[in-house]
Structure formats: C-alpha cells, structure tokens
Length: 577
Image (tube, rainbow, N blue to C red):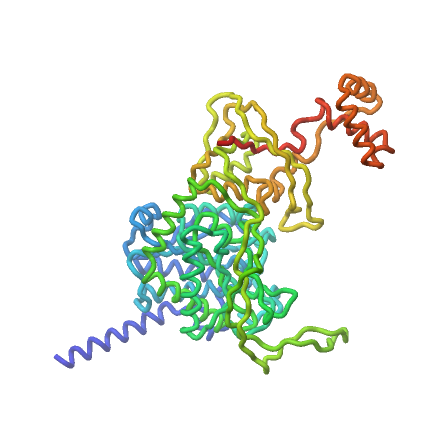
C-alpha cells in the first residue's frame, strides 16, 4: 500500500513537471531575457483556452493596426458572462497589458500568472473572475526592435510606445481618437471591473526599487472605495510586496527635484487608464517597474504584485464588491462633483525610499555639469509623499444635459461609455442654462493630435431655447454621472471642450461689409442710447479701442442682434433642478 502511495505521488510530480514544461513561456525559455512576438502571445493564451475549460478568449472590437482586441476570461465556474458575475456579486479583476509595448513586463507576468492559476500553483477564490487583455497596443507591439527605449535594461527586443497611428494610448481614454480606445471602452463597460491593473515600466530617477506604483488618486475616487484604497488597500499592497522581497514605492514623481526631497502623487486625469477607470468607481492601478532593472526582475516583481493582489482578494473580495456597489449607486444621487484637482502640500505620508546618492559631474560630451546617480552609495530615508488632492472646481449637477443631435461624435462617445441618453420625441422649447466661452488658453504645440485648451472661462445665462425632435437628453441619475460631468463641463481639464470636440463654435461664420454696416450701426446706436453710452465707456477704458474705427465697428457688431448666436455658445445645455 505504501509503495502504491509513493508511486501515486511520483506520477503526480511527473505530471506537474510535464504540465509546467508544456506551458513554459518564451520569457522563461530565454532565461528572462526575451518577450514573445505578438502572434506567439495570442497563440499561448489560445492554448490555455483550448486546454482548460475555465478559460475563454474572445475578440472585442478592432484596433488601428487592423487586428482585433482580445480578452482572456478566467472563471472557475465557466460562466464567462460579466452580467452574471455582477448579479452574483463576484469580484472582477481586469488586467491590461502592452499599452506601451516597449514596456512588456505585464505581458509575460500575465502569461505565467494565469498558467499558474490553472495548474493549481496559485489559489484564486471561486467568487473572483479575471479578464486579461494580452496586448492592447497591437500596432506598437508589431513595431518591434530595441530602438524605442534607449535607456531600458531589456528585454532584447520590444515594441514601440506609439500605436499604429503613432498615438500614445495612455492619453486617449477620454478623447478616444483611436479604434483601440473605442474598443477598450466597449470592453471596460462590458466588464465593469471592480479592480483594474494597467501594467507599465517607469523612467526617470535611479533608485533601488524594482517596482513603483501609481494608485488612482483616492480623493478623486472618493466614496467608500477611496477611503478603503488610502487606509487599507494601499498599505496592504506595500506591506505585501515588502514581504515578497520587492519593497515598493509610489511612482517617483520627483521631476525637477531630488527624490529624497519627496514628491506629490501622480494625478491620473481621465485621459490616463487609471484615471478613466476611477470615473466609474473602479479601484485602478498603474504598476511601473524600473526600466534600469534587469528584465527578469521586472517581470518577477509584476508577477509578485499580481500575487499580492490575489492575497488581498482572498480576504477582501466581498467587501470590495459591496463598497463598489454602494459607491456606484450613490453616484446616481450625488449632487456635487469636483474637477481640476490640485496637490495639497499641507499634509503628507512618510514612505521608506531606497535610493542612490545623486550628484553633478562634467559631461563627457559637453563638459558641462550633468546629473548622475552613484550605485555605490545606496541609502534609505523616509520621504514625504503628498497624496492629498483638493478639487479646484466644484460643479453642481443639473437635472439633465441637452445635446443637439448634430454633435454625433460626442453622443457616440457617451453611448460607448454606458451613458443612457433619451431622444426628444417632438420639437419642444426648454428653459436651460447656456454657457458662453469667454476665454481660454490653447497649447502652442500639438499634444496627441490636439491643441489642448485650458484655463477656460465661461459666462452663464438663462434662456428658453428651441430643440428638435431627435436631440438628446442626458438625465443625471446614472452611475456614469462622474464621467458625464468630467467630459461635458467645459472647464474640466479633460472635458470634450478641452480636447477640441467643439472648436467649430470658436470661429465665427458670418460677418459684415464695413462700408455698409457703418450706416446700419450708426442708426442702431442712435436707437439704443444705453449701448452708445457703453461704447463710450469702453473707449475711455481702452486706448486701443478708442484709436481704431474698425475695432469700434466690431464692438457694435458683437453687441448687436446681428451677431451670430452660435459663436462661442457651448452647444451642451443644462436643465437645472
């Protein structure tokens, strides 16, 4: 009997080794020096899906490269339906890889993570479902070489940051210029994950840490999840990674200063993956391994971070689900929303930072002073980490927004992000608040295909306006309210206005012939002495205006009934409570 037991154990061991060999990754075969080409990544996940009933791989949407986006689904219950997952209060983890294919650590770590779950090396509770996008930026992954990140320490070949149309996809989550982003929004709103991890590799200062972490900004996230993130989840992640011999530090956002002087938390606006996810009450993270560390260490630290999350889910999965449900429900009735957050330096946390002494020495190229880090002089110090942000603008939500149907690009974006819109059934007049764009600044150089607007000033007025059958009403009683406010309020840093969706209103379409309008304007001023007085006052206060006949004629036109009403009038209207 004892011999049979020993034989059984030996057979199990042999089977386990054989299974491990069968699913060995390209990264492992290369001793941690290489990452696979795109076709091999997909083939590997396909093999797992074919061999294990708890895995399914689906195609959802296309990318600018022409290839589809894939989502790998893991479910011990073999349901593979996010609607059912939510119905049964199961925690949904979504891992996104290769948004910057020069940073492929998460791709290799995800392959090993899912394999080891399937082989029983990692225990995942039955109430957890996992979704993985193997490669998000497929075009960048196909643009393969070793040229795109000159300072990075491996792998031997990797992809390029820009996608097939040279967009940085981690700036595209709000504006969705790319097919990649539109497909991602479809996937994200299908899954509605409770936890989202978007894997990256960092650059910047040199230090001892292999792994750094961007957690979404807890003040912007808010609610029960925001408090849990700050007080429980983040400490558990840092303690867990330290116990796994990968002591972690927040993303070293210390540009222009030495890291030992401390730094503010990275503010992940909605344009970034984690900031976008937070708009939908999702705990979201961007792990950033250090590019100067060997590739095998970076992949291992990413794998260990996945395990750390898994350990936390063993204890907190149901709590996270309940908090997310409560926060998402609360958003539908919340009255005030914060935008344009700024760092609050009045409070901080102390974090143990393991760095290298820095200094200046003559450049071999220019002879001028240059920065360097001395790895022979490591140190550990508690740094000040400023992780509190305050809203720079508070917006009271309206009862609804109305968007004329012609702004179909805006409407399509809203619909793709689970925003419920209602078409007006007939022509109707509605009392609304109207925004007029008074002033703004625009970037002088292109940024991700746009000239981004900022420091937007508006004037408000009330008006009874006519709307047509088919115009869209967005009621503000939705779980997507956070996202709606973020994109539709023009003063928001990542609003659709800031991203140039409405630039056509900023250019007047009509004008006048001066020699004809002179007589008409003079008669108009004679009939409106108050306006005449206003012009004289303006001239007394503005010497340039007083000296220019054409400027005064323009002033009259701008203040006349002939001025086109569409110019600078923001075409999204608020129906107030």
